[in-house]
Image (cartoon, rainbow, N blue to C red; front, side):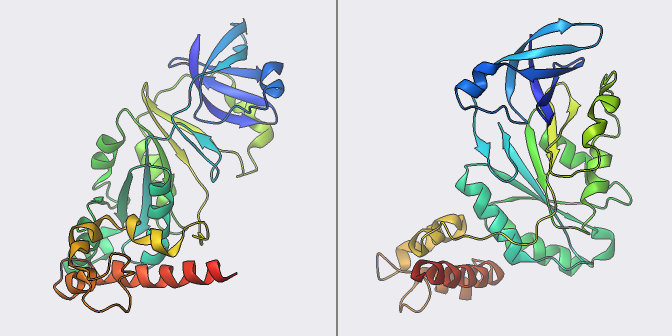
Length: 291
């Protein structure tokens, strides 16, 4: 039988096969091979007690990818949620997250919540910042449910990691996304009771037979210390069309004369917010290299 690991606590793994959830232990061969099952892994299991839904994980199927923060596997895309207002969006933090996902070749969808509290000018200004970067942007109101169906469609058939800072309505949106989910859980609530008071365990939530989301803790900072200054511009896809306007092949788009990127910013073709974030992150990368 094949399924997907949706939660792991203290050596127990909970595997969803599309109908039921089985509490499983990993066979010793994984320890021997120094391989640990991850939430999000597709696996094959042997059932040892169908009535109690108990089994053993026999094989971890080939992983598409894996992340360290959170420690999960087979992510198709990321949904990052920020508020338009209350709190004001930290675009620098958002750019850091987008870079982290791009490092792992994971596409991103951005959801800006609390559109009911923002005026049209704020919404359109925010849309322009990221649409120029070629990113998918959805505006939502968790209170009224506006935009939630658009998110559901974007998540269809995918395994999506959901992230965002605290206070943006992330938990409300996640609850709305799974409001119509009917998944047979048996005694899973009692089985995973041992871990219900901790947030350090990743959990995958089935929206339907082939759509999953997993929530990650709120984040407040992400360092870019493993990116060289000369690499950073490559994480801003909107820069590429204008790089041929730079005089120097190794232009850092900072103080150099005749820079196609700086000209595109002045012409409104590249968001000034994104460019200023680039300069801040460039300084951070340069300082990290000195140390």
